[in-house]
Every structure is written in C-alpha cells, then in structure tokens.
Length: 316
Image (cartoon, rainbow, N blue to C red; front, side):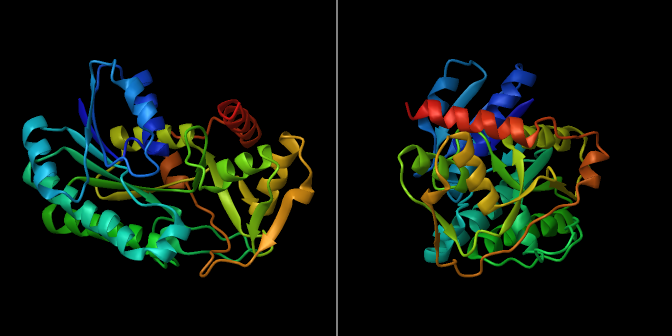
C-alpha cells in the first residue's frame, strides 16, 4: 500500500505518520508539505532513515507538481491533512485560507480523478457545523447543516462540499472525517494548550477570550489517528464520519487544569476582548464511527498529564 500524505509535517500529520509506521511498517509513505511556519521539519527528518518514507517539499496548490507526483508514484490512497488551520490567522488573512484549503483540495481531487486513486480522505473539522448553545446537550451529526463562523471553517466547509460534489458527479472514492479539537505532542504553540503551557512555564499572563466559557470537545491526537485508520480501511465511500471523545471542557477549565498540573497560580489568567465570530460550543455525535468499531482509548486526564509533561520536557 502506497500512501500520499499531504501536510504530514503538521501536528496531526506527524502523529499520523508515527501511528502508521507503528501499525503498518510495510506501507510506503510519501509526504508532501510546504513547511510553512507550523511545519515540523525536525520530526520529518527523523523519518528519513526509514526506507519506506520519502518527503517532498511542495504546495498542494501547485498543479504541475501534484500531477507529476501522482503520475510517478501511482498512489493507492491519499490523506489530505494540508491546511491553514488557525482561526485567528484566518480572520486577518482569509484569502490564504481559501487558497490553500479550497484550491489545494480541488487540485488534489482532480489528480485523484485523473490517476484513478483508490481512496481520497479529507481531514476536516467540527467547526464546519458552526456552534451550539452552551446550556444545551445538543450534538452535531454528520447530516447537520454546515454553518461555519470563521474564514477558516468556511474554507474547510467549501473543501468538504467539493469532495462530496466529486463523489456524486465523478463517483470519486472519497471519505471525510470531522474531528473535534485535538491535543498531544508536536502541536504548534499558537493553539490553546501548548500556548498556555508555554506561557505558564515562563510565568507570563494567560489571555482568555471573553469570559472563558466557550466549550470544546477534546480528543487526543492518537485516538484521532486510530479513527482515520479505521475509516481508511473500513469506511464507506461517499460518507462523512465525526470523530470526538465526548470530553467537553470550557477554555477556562482547560487553563485552570494546566495551571494546577504545573503548580502555577490562577492569578496568571487574564480575560481579553473576545474575537469576532467566536463559536460558543462544539459537540459531536460519533455513533457512525463507533459502528465501525472505534472507541477512544486515551482518557482525558491521562492524555492531558502526558501532554503537559511532554511540553514541559521540551522546554527544559
């Protein structure tokens, strides 16, 4: 099996490559990444010793490069992690998100169609559904309407719609997964958990948007990787699968947990002006994925303790 993994130098991508080599050592992995600011070049270098791994620095919007790779390599399956993902950045530079997340997905879909790839899997996000009220137990299913709130989530929703259109029009063998917030090792420190850990260790203030009540469902990146594995091998073409852990925490709860684990004072918390369009709550119904045999394995308490310890060690 030859896999083409785009965005493999990013947070979830590098963890997925780790996972696949541990569970499928005979698989051949070709990784493409533009190595923008959030790319983990050191982790990519560590794979170079593996004869079943190769890396190409490049952009998924480069149609000539993508077609050349597909023609030369004849991939069996494509997993598209490549994306601009930070909501705050999308508010200030929306066109970058449209370019990479929409145009890039379009280029990949055209190549999959031309070179008859067995499966294209799109990594999406729960943010495409918009948000839910804080004081309710509603959850999003795969059939919930798309109501994105930010340029980031709108660009991911657009990419999802392209995938579904290619499935219907061209019978392209696609699957889509929409995951809740991930945490774990190798995450770029612009995201909430590593950002707060780093600042707490440096005795800096921990800024929280609004009143900190915005709620997210948190899943360990390794549980996310197992879910993608199951969808790749057992998922039905043309289907969307939600991936979540039913571990809802407010941003304020998350920050307090980090401070407690690091033995830091809550006086470091500061509340700042809320960002535009800030979603209130995300929560997913994952019944469809569980019917394939998936269940989370990493408890939130264990995962967070290990994650905090990992970043603490990184900063020593």
